[in-house]
Image (cartoon, rainbow, N blue to C red; front, side):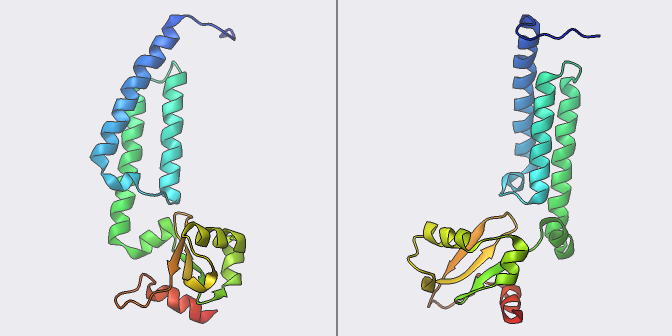
Length: 179
């Protein structure tokens, strides 16, 4: 049975952490660079899972003597490959993308708070007002819509008189008309 060590276990474990930590860090950077920019975009649920898993593997390889660097790097490569495959499928299939990342949700539209959606998504009016303030808007009369994005952030769309394609896609407008 291993003895419990509270304060000092010698230089060897510290040296291992320095060497394995540095090499793992370099390996992560390399894998993220070859996986592309999509890996580092704002997170949806799947991206969050990958990030937490990578952090867990990194912590484990640093602190557990029995986990070799090669196993950690293969684990990172697996996670990056899974993230690449999922993002590749997302781009090619709307149904798959909707399953993995969900859909944005309209919470406010043309002066109306969509209470049912707010309750369903657990978003308070105060959070939407804060999002409008962050956009330097003085009152909600200046807001066309507020959308809960798949990343969990709130997008505030200002009213506009400009012509052109709206950032409010047709599904948002259909959702607003159903309320």
